[in-house]
Length: 379
Image (tube, rainbow, N blue to C red; front, side, top):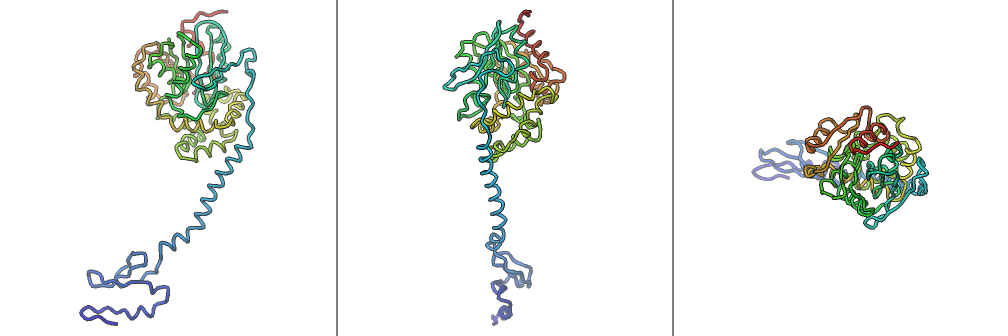
């Protein structure tokens, strides 16, 4: 078949194999012959290319996609089975490390919070870290009770307190602690907080809460957009990264076994021997409470709120003591930033101390709190 004026020989197409007959021949701007694939791409002038359809590509990939998606769904479903098979811890009636200290509960904003009270003297409220509970202070409480009326509380979503559906950010935890102070009518309180407990105490002071007299911020978790836990261990890094991915973060938490949780928690102390094994096991078991893992993922998801809260530190007028463990996750520049934000604060570094300073160096920490509070020693 020919065309006058510009001849194109097309009869050869009839001699092509059936698989190649879907090729279209187009005249290019230079007069050459272009071969256009069924998908729209072209080969060089005068050449031929096999016809490959995008639909065919998808069909070829379908088995692999089914395997991948099926595997992910399978892991997701298995994670729920793992969660179901885990034993839920019974709420203890006594403290394992101090059976004589009574355990109490109080309603704060409709939530039941666990707390303890012991000792005599000025009011001291101990605020624990993220993912732990009031038992973090088990090495510090007995001595502090000789100088203070000591209170320690489990935040919502932690320890044996209620686990609500909420936005677990800095504002939420601060309101909970302020509500705790109100519910017990605590006055002239010294707030001593570790990790997120530090910013909680500082935010309450910045809000000019009249019940707060002094603040001891221990390794305050208010830097790196709240991603400090990623520096604890590989498991901590994975927990931090996956917390921002829908479904993945919760799946990872459901599948976390004792060894994974142990790795994260031991990354919080300067020496593994400073973390009592019984406490380690209890904190792991507490994580098996229904919805506990969701609260933790929620907290990590809103971790940037802790650094954002530093914007109001300049409003603080009460005395502040900043205490850093030498081996805490915070870098020197991040520690200095808090010093600049709180120019009137005293800052101390405790040698051989990690993030969980009450476990690493309880005696040194207690001495700092007692001196800062001006409390008298009672023998």
